[in-house]
Length: 185
Image (tube, rainbow, N blue to C red; front, top):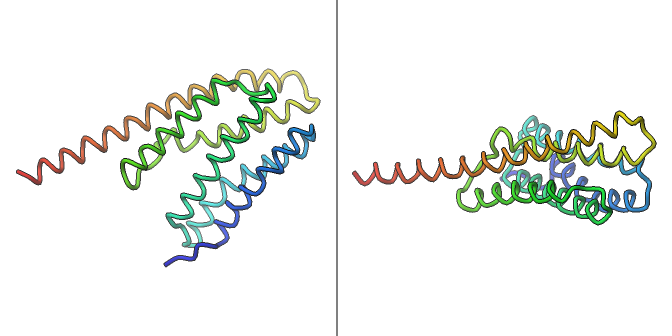
């Protein structure tokens, strides 16, 4: 049995513990600190799985902890941004639908994997968080415009992720029913 507490899981736990600091720094207008915090969170999300695989400590618990940390961050921080009138409600709805289709797939099928598109949704949302935070700092107009054009792209990717999750679920259900029918014959 693998240890529950290891370096990769500690990095993921750190990401969860940084959520309140991110919220406080953003709501108090300390946008530079919020920018640094979201950068650390993005890096930790990227590194925790790589470290777990490299050290041979990858586990189902670690994968669940990672997905849980991402869901908590995405839901809570988007809520803060919506209340602050700094986030489009449409992105929040699409990200919830993307997470829901993935989580439903995991409930229906053990070992449901993220599709190719779904793997990048969390990173794109975190990148959009970063853009949203740094546009609160005095920046060139070009960066503000870049953020405006990035939002429709994120909505498109989230939409494709939802479609992909549903198609993976249906395909796996079809093949499992087909396998059962073949075994009966």
